[in-house]
Image (cartoon, rainbow, N blue to C red):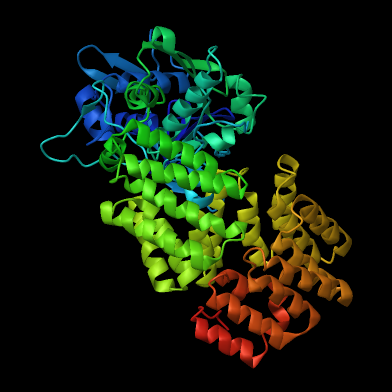
Length: 636
């Protein structure tokens, strides 16, 4: 039943997972809606077994999840189980919907449901999905921000608990009509302790591992640990943290390793209701055992079930070596810190992980990612790309099903090989293995492939998932789309939270320049140079601004500064090309672009979309260069 229908005084909209009555709208979980639809379709008593087969066909569920769904349904309908008006429990029989059901068969052009003639009028209200968003402190362990920039790492999962059972009928039941999933959002706070810094670090490690585990379910949007840690003032208060992070649920915990127990609480943020308060006796010498105990209970509490494919991923663990896994977490923590020294530490930890477990495919994929990030720290592509490629090929040799590795190989093909067919193939394979991955780079790939609307959708998906940690990535996309107001808005918000972001200041200055706000652009470039005096991107962007505003001597001084910087580290010729283009030295600019292309430091979308190169686009030599790069041509 996909159409809206009336149950007593309530208008039910299965596609919206909502119930409306007297201008009041209640949103329910998708499984709760499916139970209601099954009861409405039957028009009679439906046994528990039938409901389980229809709603949870071929899935992992807990024994009493149906009881919880019925309880939630009654709560939504304001139905008293002692004096039911809607859902009646039939002892040893099942459940029955006793309120009258009436199908609303059509919709008028305004979108309102039309009831059959003679039926009472019904009201309808739209449900707006909750926004999903996600304290950074110095830790010696973890924080998986690779998911932020490399877009969605999901490495570690565990075997199912004995509390879960598999429901596999002899013949696969035809699933009941389902509504589109409205996923709940959840944040896992660092587990607290009173035993000092070492224990605090372990508490963050547990939180991050659970975050990764819960992310395996497509029913949940789980805020990355790196984002949670930005709210240093709220993480000790679950209600405050949930409101700041704008999530539906918050998971908090307290560790006591000396007594081998952990207290876990799940809070629903909209009303502060504690859905789970439980104390478990558990030794914590092995984080895998702790995750196996906590994960199923949390999924149960959130009424999340896993379909067959999700269950397979949920079982999978990329290493059975706890020390290798801890090294992997530490590697990701350092990989997302800003300095080059942090990246080098990260590489050492990844190498430790694969030394401890030579078959750790996910660690090889992370190593590939970290090598790629050296490009932001004066390392030439000729140095880091071969190492990145070797690591990712090793990952795929060990396990061809690691989506992270396919995503990295797609990124290498796209940004360094300019092999767009191979990039598309790898991104498609990534999407097949893990739909939540590759949003940022896949979006940029779609932009280059002349699919800006689809690319924007991909970029927005990741922005919705993680709006705080890497806004400059999204803003760069809008800069290339020339939607400067949107890019400026995102960068301004990012700089309110992270005023020390050099890349954000440089990009915002470039946006201001295109808007004609030259004084503000100059201020942003100067801030970037104060934060990082030898940053080539800032020098190139500032040099272009000087050239475009007639300050030729200042522009040439920036050009010479780049020449000097190139003696101490790698400087992409693209930065010099910007200054040449601003000065009107078109042949020199094209020379630098061709050199950047040969050195693989020229990004395809920059060549195709950067507005600062517009005065070159009409040049026959530039157009010939575009053809030789095999860059997809924009439709005429």
